[in-house]
Amino acid sequence: MLVTEIYKIIPNSHDWRKLPNGNHVKLGNGVKLGNYVTLGDHVTLGDHTKLGDYVRLNESPLQIQGPRFIVYPHSPGNIGIGCEVHSFKEWEEVLTYLLENYRIKEEPYRTYANLVKSWMDTNMPITQSTLPEGKKA
Image 1 (spheres, rainbow, N blue to C red):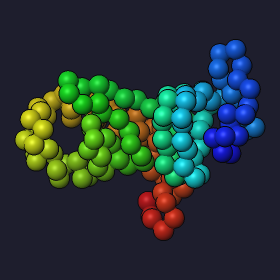
Image 2 (image 1 turned 135 degrees about the vertical axis):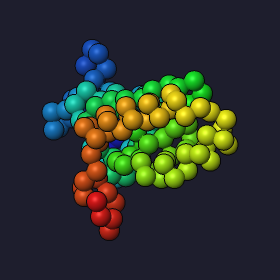
Image 3 (image 1 turned 120 degrees about the vertical axis):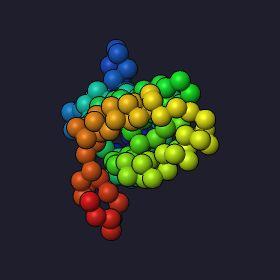
């Protein structure tokens, strides 16, 4: 379903739109959805949110605002801290460099990243269906 089609659905008194599959979504202004994006029930997307291809979002993601940077689930298997986005494995490989480069302390960011990863393991698991064509889990 295209975003333009979703916007044509008349929202209820609380601004929720009921999709043909029964899920309720709330979209802000200027939302852009890529191909094969799946939105679950009661998902809220703020203004100018962009979701790339193959995103599955069943509920609003856990995001933690650190002292300088936000920690958030970027895509299955990838965590973002500020503008840096890496796989779980890559974070371990680049951690020392990033701590020095951005002059931040490992704690609390390691704790925040572990909490977001735990949320992702439950709500955004890596499966073959969440990966682009040709990639393997």
